[in-house]
Image (cartoon, rainbow, N blue to C red; front, side, top):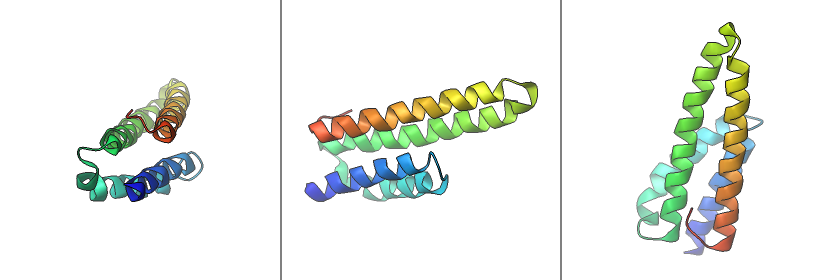
Length: 102
């Protein structure tokens, strides 16, 4: 069980690193999908689902923001997506430390 907690912490760390470098989030997503079955039925299952949804929704809003930069609202969307991702990583990390599901 401790190994799964460590994996979950690593993925949150990779997501946090993605604020500066994009690649770590993709590595975290791959880890989530590879280890997802191991997390089934545990408190970590909700964290894995949270992390996976964070990645895909964050990517969607990043793409939308990039496309809309040309009409002027893209930077607002990109900033909002960045703040939202910070919220998701911090909330998940805190819940994990408390031993609670997200």
